Length: 316
Image 1 (cartoon, rainbow, N blue to C red):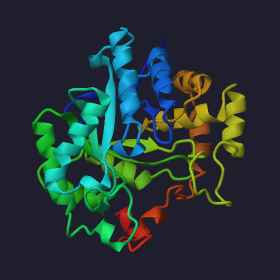
Image 2 (tube, rainbow, N blue to C red):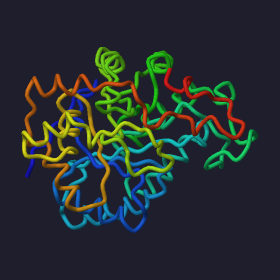
Image 3 (cartoon, one colour):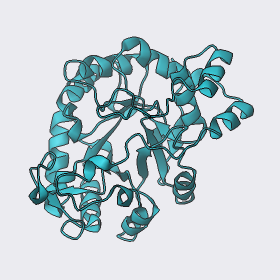
Image 4 (cartoon, helix red, strand yellow):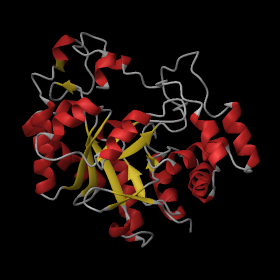
């Protein structure tokens, strides 16, 4: 079985540096994907309430545990608080629903998904009345509630997603720094400054959309390709590997957690096998030159329908 790299959190807990992403994994597909991944050797499953598939993920985890494929101690499960549960009294019920869906007594990591707030019960806003401003739902109060669910043993670690230094400093002042910050990162958006900022504060960075999120809706016609980029393809040919494997290994080599999504059994196993590759210093330097500061998920979807938010303001 492929050995699993880990990264140490502030309290010395070891977090698996490679996992299965489940965003965009459809019901009817994600159950098999999680079971295949756990059987192949994955030890980290990344989930979120808004993905709409945690119940099926939970069934796959439960069946794998019951079959002896994996033990709970070997498994790392991450989930995320959706934007409609940012008010202090809504955080614990949201996590309790996730735990019920996942069929777990606790999760290993719970993240604030976005620095964006909706009114309770709103899946995604249809008009101005469905939004809450950060004055109405302060992130500091949401973070206080996150600290409380950690103290209650419902999650072992707490962290954030899609946040920059300003907001991380704000939350750290509440009483506990995030253990993890999950953000978009890949060779076209390397996030060097944010990675250094987090590293200096013992915050682990998790990279989502490491392959460019080519299967998402609302793609732009002029998006720069990752999987077809000449540098990535050349390195893949040198190592007799796939472009996806190079992108995954690059993310691990630079000290981030990486969570590629797939529901294809062959690709799930291929992605895991990327951990066996070794990139040279020259190859890492060549990939470093690909940085464009380009976001595939630019946040524009949170600026519509009477939103009080701006895309640029999300990443502070």
